[in-house]
View 1 (tube, rainbow, N blue to C red):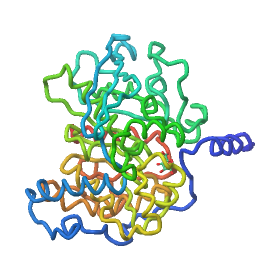
View 2: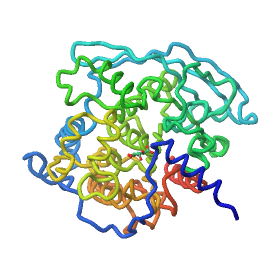
View 3: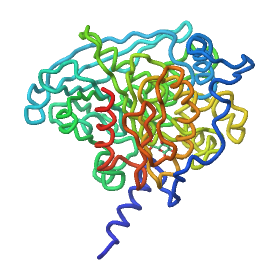
View 4: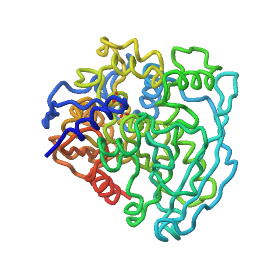
Length: 420
Ligand code: GCU
């Protein structure tokens, strides 16, 4: 068989996109390595240990949130307001009659210190199972624009739109990073009773070190300490909250909102849930550094590597811990603990060592005591490979590399069915 075209395609895709580093190493399936530090209920910034759920909620969680913003992600706005500029039904019988497709035009104003700024107007598309306006909704942000997530001709495409964040053509992306990298199986999702809502976060916070950084600085200009100004991961996390604001406007009924993100958006899907209690659950696939994987003792992407390559993703403060991760007062198990007792799926792949599955597993182990405080069983597996979709801390690992492949969405839906 002539493999040259495949190899050329692979080389081109890897050259063109910064989406992922494929390594040939394998993640260890045993939870090897040191425990997450500091222990989640142990001493934190000299405040002593805690033992009760009440102490977690009222004393510990607020200072953990503060520390995550100060040292890693930067600060969320002091206040904000979302405006729905318009909303219309694009197709009442999309997906062969299975879904109602809508489009929202949105804009938010946000306050940092004394300054109020506005985002660019941006769009959200929603597909709901016909007749079920309150179906649990999966909130999706991806590398590719809304019209890749929901490839319907009526979805609005601005003329000057950015393409996929990685820059490579969507077809090549799919070939290398799996069939669902750009387009989730919406028909399958609708048939299982879930709605899908999607924004392309680059429409208000571009994923580019120059333009993105300029926009983030502008939006947070009133922030007194620019060392802690927010990065794109926090802005996109805020984007998930904006999606909920828009969807909640005409819904009095309780509704489940699940943040879904792969890789860089897996980081923001977790952060959104940690800071917004309206999020009912999270699917964070291969979220890696700045996501589920611990900063200390990590394999794969280091703090130095991520802050060098993506200076716009985090607060400038995070970079100072490059090579000094042991000095960090918080680590990623704290991020997971803030989501307790809500269900989280951490997706991984054995050869995606860049995202450090082992570090994500140890973070889940480190967050587990907070799930237990809530009376949840949390993590129900002792090895990375013993997947338990009904667990509140569910850890999914499959063979292969970085991407969203054929077997991933069935696993995501299995997790959702077990919880919602
Ligand atoms: C790069 C980056 C990761 C990120 C990934 C992605 O590989 O180093 O931190 O998760 O891109 O978003 O695909």
